[in-house]
Image 1 (cartoon, rainbow, N blue to C red):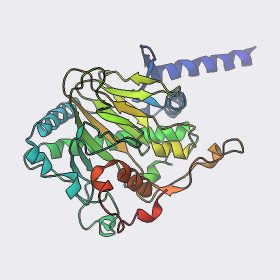
Image 2 (cartoon, helix red, strand yellow):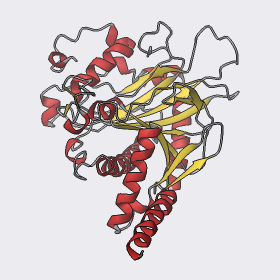
Image 3 (cartoon, rainbow, N blue to C red):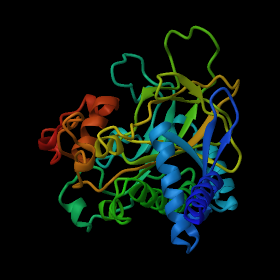
Image 4 (tube, rainbow, N blue to C red):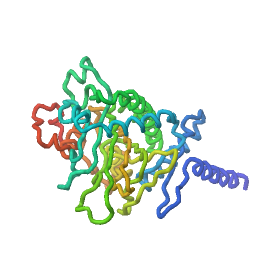
Length: 358
């Protein structure tokens, strides 16, 4: 009886522990909110319990919110002001750093600069994209690897550079923590993803969405349905809702703004590594808030040369591999070529990643 009681108590304790890591925001479909507090503790068992709870959320939902993330409030306030000020600049100032003029895919994306796969309708949003700052002496820059190089910053808005650079570092660290939890939740060594994100193709995007009228808009949408390319995406709906995610049943769910949280979506390479045991999260943006909407988004992608293919534990006789091996660089080149208007119009014969198309 004592042994039975001990096992029962252990199961109950685990259930209580999991509940302490994940809570659910009420609504037509409860939204999972994961606390990262246990990650920063020195309690190995609590960290493992958090990883297992997050793993269950990833399997069942494909998306989640995070709280207790540790990002400084003064950083978020400064980033919000800098982003709004940038988008309020005259178009000529923004077009001075047009992404089409950057060999490193950095800078301003005007409205209509992207079109979702399978659609002829361009996104209504405008955006600013930055990534890891690399100088001309960097070996990968010298080698001509796509997406390696310096950022393009607007001279007319000098505060954008320090605030977004700071946010980039904070979100890189946070996503490193999340990917370590992913590894533990998948039964991998805790450093599995860290070894594949030593020089990540991580991208920070600021976006502005115009107000859209309800009803028939001729198919126009702030950001059309798509999945992101990497491990995990972090989305901060700064001032208005508009994000929608597609649940595993195929139903679109409005993602609410929940104070103190960020929304996290699984990306394509997570789906590839797990053979869709954890699926990439389809999502879109439809701004019906009645006002202009701003967001900040962070795409945490592996290193350029990182090989991505289904892991052996997710491949069986009844679940054959769904994806051929590729590299993150090849996957990103192919993806960008399919959605960015300036890349559709350009020739990429000299691009060193062109030989790795999926």
